[in-house]
Length: 83
Image (cartoon, rainbow, N blue to C red; front, side, top):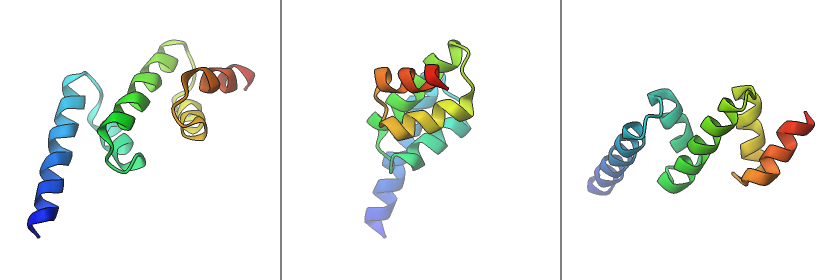
């Protein structure tokens, strides 16, 4: 039980850091789950999601492409442009 508590606290700290960067709570939670609670991968995903969203791409398509491309920016952008 103690180990799970530490994991949960670590998860909360990671979420808090991402929220302080201006990401929405729902997106942070979703990204953390998608990347098995890896703060680094979740942060990469959220950053690219915001970037591509600013470029005018649809959020649903962005998520699919980023997952497909493993957060590789250039590959994901290429996929989005081809859609």
